[in-house]
Amino acid sequence: SSDAASGDGGGGGGDTIVVGFAQTGSESGWRSANTESMKTAFSEDNGFELVFNAADNDTAAQIAAVRGFINQGVDAIVIAPIVEDGWDDVLTEAADAGIPVILEDRTVSASEDLYAAWIGLDFEEEGVKAGEWAAEMYGDEETKMVVLEGTTGSAPANDRATGFDAAIEGTMIEKIDSQTGDFTRDGGKSVMEGFIQNYGVDNIDLVYAHNDDMALGAIEAIEAAGAVPGEDIKIISIDAVHDGMQALVDGKINYIVECNPLLGDLVAAAVTGVINGDDVEAVQYVEDLAFDQAAAEAALPDRKY
Ligand code: GYE
Image (tube, rainbow, N blue to C red; front, side, top):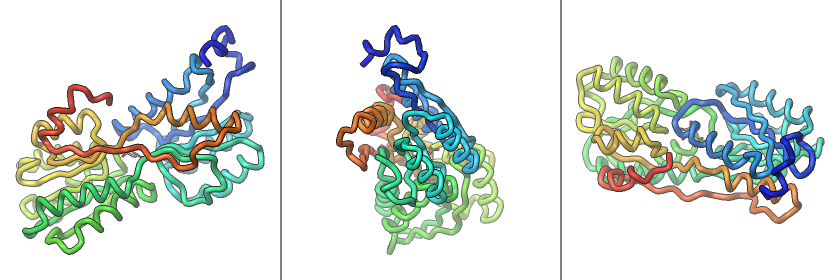
């Protein structure tokens, strides 16, 4: 409790729980909101000492950070895994050292025995929601679509593609190209510039972006090519961060599926529960909404991120 923590002086003794958090990096607005949520939840006032690492989306650096936490002997490790594969060794090392691991945000392909809990979002369902809307709006006419993928090998890039593709099956939406923009605005912009160069701005009808930041980058590329985003080229994205929602209100994005980054309190509760030996739900999904322009207009004033 905060009472137990106050007066502790941050010395790391007593009731303070020392948590190493291996964040992906700082690629997007979603990530900024997630980092802030985590730092707030794992505050000294809440009885934590947070050792924060952001790996700049370098998977080797992220694994090295987790090894550092193990060597340091932290009480618990939280990871937002950049990619799904490659976690078996270091998770086994954490288990051997008796340090519990809690995953937040993205999932891993490693055995569930190697971590105590995962808290995050249903990325495949997000893709389905985006695809169902695309199918309903554009599925009856010939629609040439390009896809801006998230970080290659990441759970949200994999699952958002799977869900969307399943939802548009049998429609007249044709995926003409799909490349990674690494979840960044710059990445989305340069990949979209390449698509426009290769296919011609008039031959692209729809962009499906795995996050808002890449959609915002694509908007810049579309406008620079003299076309009108949201009209000449429709755009669907995922996250519903503030700048994305503003673009939706402005008519430059047509639909956004939410991905809630405010996971800090749930993750902190899971860490505390695991350390206290409580029964902690091993898989915790957080609910997501979806917005068209009117819904975005209504929601924007009260958005927390
Ligand atoms: O959608 C994207 C971020 O893993 C859900 O990562 C997260 C994704 C999010 O960079 O904006």
